[in-house]
Image: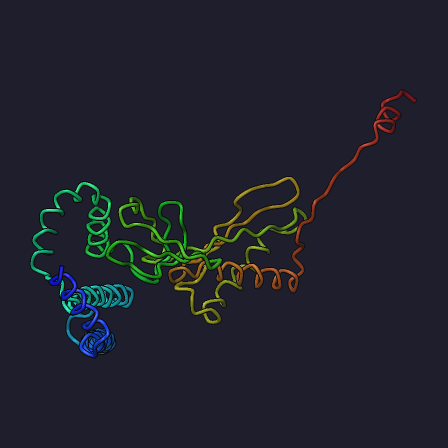
Length: 294
């Protein structure tokens, strides 16, 4: 009984004594130092990685800007994960937790939880092949898994796609099964121009063709002179002619709007009539009157 009371007194003395608080203070200081060094390593490492990719632009082995942005973000993210994991292990050691037995137990437990982490492994492997095969890169405009927008980030496990309305869509890499990339090759702007039946088609085509030759000087997004394909359809109240223009990737929407504006203004200046809906009405009474014998 006396031994139990003695142990209790020692415990009380240890808790209330300065030794415990000194140990807690030292531990807290070590943890803060570990976190500070980790943040410093991440910041310096990010600058070194960015500088490395900038130097690659002037080297003999150059890569495209879109692929450079993707690889740079991936390397920085990977470095960040490694630094944080190392800091976590060091913090555990500060608390007196032995890492060796934990790692040995993790190897055995990994077999047990491996079946539940199949999706995680699939996402990581899929992310590797997305980058290795250059399916898409940061800044590309893509359509995948029902999501359309600009690629903001490609990580080890997920891909972030920003819709043109501002939403950020986070997709597991394993769900990226089919991709439509609009940013690799040049785009095509398609513009349909409608004129009234009363116009001279040859004159209208001449007016539009002369305009199209002037446009590449005004719009640098065009890679060639737009082409007038001719009459594409005969509608109820108008004649439809089609224009196509090759543009740099993802600029076809803006170029199409510009062509519509330019064509409309030029047709008005040259007196080519823009069509409007028409309805021709016949009076049945008048038709029967004309058919009666005189």
